[in-house]
Image (cartoon, rainbow, N blue to C red; front, side, top):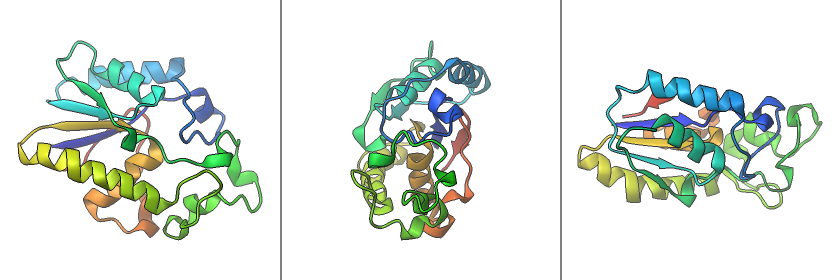
Length: 183
């Protein structure tokens, strides 16, 4: 089985700031969410967990799997999408003509990223290589795999696994600290 989870809440989530690859830790609410998820999902058998190296994902995985004999491995390809110079921008939807908003409203047309950022295709390439090189062989062995990551990054995996067109990228909701079974 393949499962995916988004990290717990951060102060930047609460302020509607674009986090991207900026390394923001969980806040107390996020830690509580991860603790509640640990109790809720304790019966899901897992063989291995892969997570983003960003602290909010790592901390979520560590809290979730505390006391369980499940190794946690980080992989750079599981980092959140880079929003470049727009990371840290608060309430981007309220900024007329904010170029990064195209990713949220027309992800299939987000081909040229903002300065220092990634396009949708950059994100799909790196998460696709992770799926092919790491996850698929484990699933072929019958392993139960959990990925703990981020909103946009997780959805790039969901779209690839479920063959969802990019125009429908945001149709699947991945709430903080909720496990979604993909396969």
